[in-house]
Length: 439
Image (cartoon, rainbow, N blue to C red; front, side):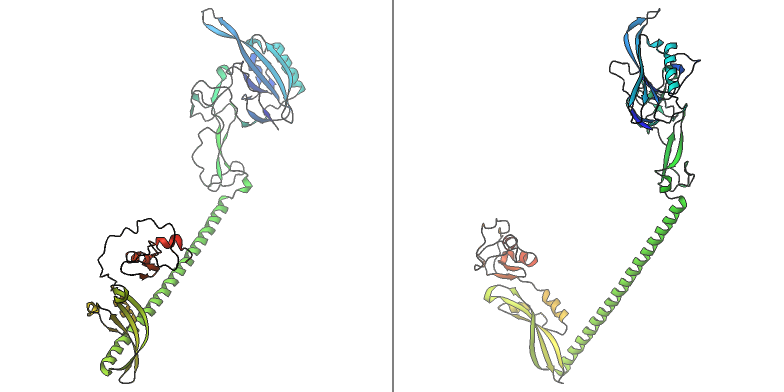
């Protein structure tokens, strides 16, 4: 097979009347172009044809106008006929060319004799195999007619292309444009290997055989031996379904085991909490019965300011104490103590707990409140200072001020003025984010 580019129609030729044809034989009983046998190819198309094929190129030109006896004008055409031989490398060797003053006489006896001479020298197959790689522009279609291949669909005017000449001309969709049937049903046999097709492995292929209409065949996509059969596809799907089911079962078992572990841990925590609370109740009962003979401070795990600021601030703390009872038994208690000028405000706070969780819950209910008058602050929206004060100078980690009315406060995330305490307790301040990222 040789890949050739069919010569295009020259600009001065009539694109509607010019054509290209593979010449395979001559019908001695016919006259004119009807004596020519062979498939037509579109001008400008790229096709693959057998090596040694004869390509006939006909270009008609309008030379003037004439009138019928009824006064109707019609064009006067001449014709240039050329015969080419296809070489293995795809080049076209000119064998014969002639210009005819009148297009209607271009395939007279002399021309048919010359074409017959070259057919004898280069025998041609009756039905050469032609594969169209690129359709090229082809001869324009100026009428809306059903496609010769799919028959049921009309090709719009100036769409598709025209095949043949005169009353024998037909219209066709360009290759790949005919509406294909619906999706291939799984299990439909492949027309090439007869194996049942698996889903997604086959498509419809249009078979065009003159004179038409064409037919649709189900064929594997690509090589048949590269596609799984329906049985192989079903086996693979069953294996995948089994794998998915096994994986889901494993995940379900993992979740069930995790839920069981969590339930057991919750039970242990609940039992431990109940045991601790029972022990705390027993301790309280023992303290009430035997009394406390001595108390020793162990540690102060929590300490915070609750009123005011500076040296005169009122503070609350939790003190862990080891108690010795009248019967010699040692127990632990947590006392909440309030010290400062405003301690009377917390007179109703329970003082002693025998469970740290209870003491901490009471401790967290009390928050700091300033006894100084408050004023709307604009520091949070004010621009930061151009430079950071030296580390020796106390300044707020949020607004950067070096002045703290009411005294400096120690927040969980750094030093702050009273106005910025809440910010510095929950997230790093703007000043620290800008100047002290290394902290």
